[in-house]
Image (cartoon, rainbow, N blue to C red; front, top):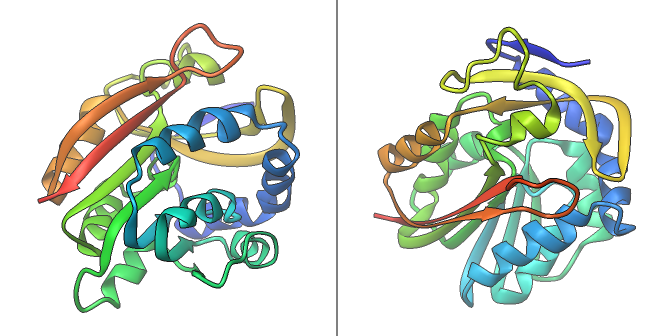
Length: 238
């Protein structure tokens, strides 16, 4: 069942991801989640140069953080879900990685200066209740000319894939919270999660307003759907 709402309490959002953390780790580590392993991760890694200090914003259980850490001397994974971060510390630890149970918004307020050379953020912007605050915080912790690699649900086709494009409350040009049972192509669940639909121009204008220059857009398809399911955006901190 899908429910569309104007807003969602951040504490409830975090609790949803706490509850699904173990399932997400199993789906990815077992290979069930083809998109995570063979579409999103390779697309991000392909754009990632060797850097000294890397941050994974919305790191979840750390599966991508660990892979990306091979391209940096030091890596930080940040996620509001304490259950996800606990799993990351057990399943995807390296001596070069530090995991923190925190939101990027709160973390950025504790930093006196930008410290990271590059940031990745896989499908996390669409889980933030305040897109502008998410990108502003991400920019604040990046050095000037730092690279920001972001993946998001494709705004044009994700509503079709998840089945809410025909919902009476849905309007493409409006931002809205979408509650639904979490699913991947090979597995449906009864566990509720929430993501936020934003039109494409909203993502781009928010990035630019936050101090990023967009350098590249890529549409990513994956299996089981005839249209692009995700978008990759490569930005540079200005």
